[in-house]
Image 1 (spheres, rainbow, N blue to C red):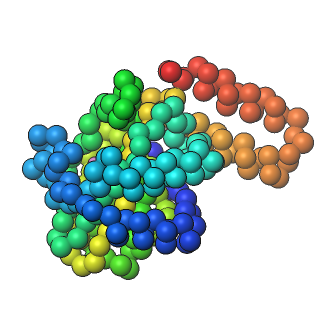
Image 2 (image 1 turned 60 degrees about the vertical axis):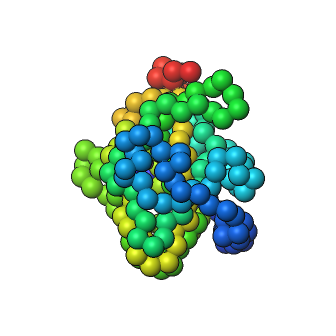
Length: 226
Ligand code: NI
């Protein structure tokens, strides 16, 4: 399931994040790539321990913990601290699949990358190219969202970023280990939650509501692996 979540950031928050990102010192993205990814990767990245990366990363995690669409779609167990990249001057990232396991910096903890996310900090008209292209069983999807919006997609997907031929594309990306590992089960839970929300809005006192919400929670209990 691919999910687009609008307005994760307000215009003022985007402006502040952009200011911090534009003033930061960036390094070659290949420094954090594995052996195979290194050949495909041609972008800039903030070092993981860069104060701006840590400050904006914490800020984003705080927002996500209160974002109903993210919580319902991702059912997050653990989120890796967001990373930041910058594409310009023809920079791109060829087709690859992200690593399956990452260590959480400064801890013994490791997370499985069930979901990948990209949060955009540049508006589509600020740059040419820079589309996130994702392949899944339903075909190839091209994603280029307004600043402040994000996309969530299965970590197992083959994906690339096309060359940025004009302007600069800033984004945050991060991985989530979900309570529910299987994508098809998360999709069912997402649809069930949306249906329950819809009924709750039009018929809040319907006698089947407690049973419906109970089924939702019992399915999570059944399918969650923590
Ligand atoms: Ni990737």
